Amino acid sequence: MAATGKCFLVTGPPGVGKTTLIIKVLESLKISNPDLKVQGFYTREIREGTERVGFEVVTSDGRKGPLASTKNSSVESLRWPTVGRYRVDVASFESLALPELQVKEDTDLFIIDEVGKMELYSSSFFPAVLKILESNTPVLASIPVPKFGRDIPGVARLKNHPGATIFTLNTINRDAIKEHIYSQLVDLLPKH
Image 1: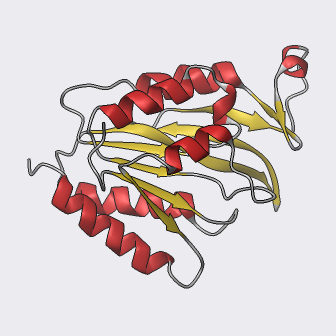
Image 2: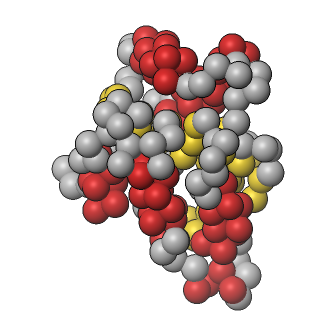
């Protein structure tokens, strides 16, 4: 089971900067530790002008693929699960994200952005996240804020994990939290 303080969960309202924080922490860690072995993914908005039309998955090595879209109207996409107005491409998500979530001996850090409703449509995703927590490898992940005061069951389980520390971002504290998480991870990660 992950040791206390090895699972950093970032939460906050949409648009507050959870993904940006994770990317900045990762960039800083790679500067201070160029041989850092990172696995995982983050999600990024897809925009057409000012309108958000979907999300894509970006792996730790830069591969990209669709996660969800309002624009895909293929016959196949009509069977995909939906979150709000987005159709979730579970097969694309799994093909990119699941290989990144395989526990390997030489992995120093896992990035998981995000453990949310779209990602949890994959039946293989949450078991992979739990395996990572059991591996004792540090994790930096984002989770959504509860809707109507209720967490998604998988998110609640993650928040209640004994190794989890939760950071709630807002526009005032996000830089301080970024620095705090960075310094905590520097202390946890091996020096290469």
